[in-house]
Image 1 (cartoon, helix red, strand yellow):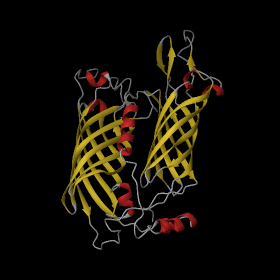
Image 2: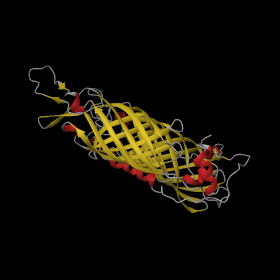
Image 3: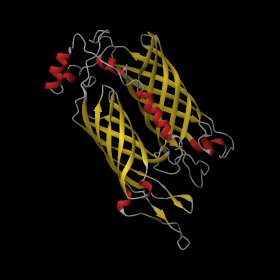
Image 4: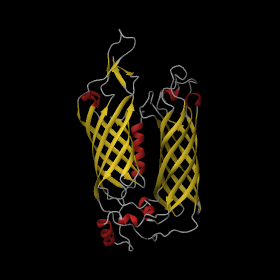
Length: 424
């Protein structure tokens, strides 16, 4: 997973680039009206916009890419002894967005979201395979350059299937992919040209990462840098929705503190130090933990806060000894207190309809010894289930470059006063 933490940070920066923006009351919705409705009747302000109309679209894309040589396997340590350089993928995407000049459209910068299906053709597929990817995606405008041209960002997150993983007997050279299923993460920036009222042409640059989140060895992963090009066809509704005047600004945001509580779990593999070498343990170790995060809601799109992070890592401080008298190497688990840690992290979250992308930087403060003495970085995606509950999918990196563990769980937000302009 070399370079993975930098990729995740790039993903976060791509969506937080324009998070701060000042909003003023409209003539139709005054600050007094907002105060009366929003402060005294929970949910009343939201209910004004429950019927936010949406517009559907279908798109196709191609994404040729260059496989970054982050491992000797991609350089020449494969059956061909030649560099593995290219990838090519085709994408079919369904998306929906909010009608122009609705509050959701104005607040979040013309956001859209949807599901996608992709097929990848990789050079030297005999050892890597040609995987399919199923993913969620979301994007929005970064800048409106002209009436018909805009700069946008988009992230993709999903699951890829159909890999040919490492196998000691049948596929021994593939030292980068260890499982048939791997996470798929992509971030891209692109220009969008309006060709007609219902047709857009999009082209830009894209960065992609595949890995299994340290759930199986090997887990070096595969990274690509490339371009994308495609068209989006929009199904324009026959009946025009009731929307705000284009010159209207959106209501003032009421700042407040909310509290996120997340419980997560996963499993992981680890390497154990033995005679100045790292030996891979054959076991999969459980991971369980929680995060309690008071977050200050600065505006519609940005939260900042701190988090108390507790974890039980079943792989922490696992050790082995000389196995001359044993048929195979034996790995031993330490006492429970040497696998528990409590840390503090600073958090930043970029808030959009349905999804929140977050980044955390922290350090374990209470721990026993060894492996848990570390700084850690967290990238997380929170997907709404209800107004206050969400699915949490995160990944922890140790000391900025070492793969740590997945964080798969559920969360609940307390004291949630955030107004929703997109719920029905």
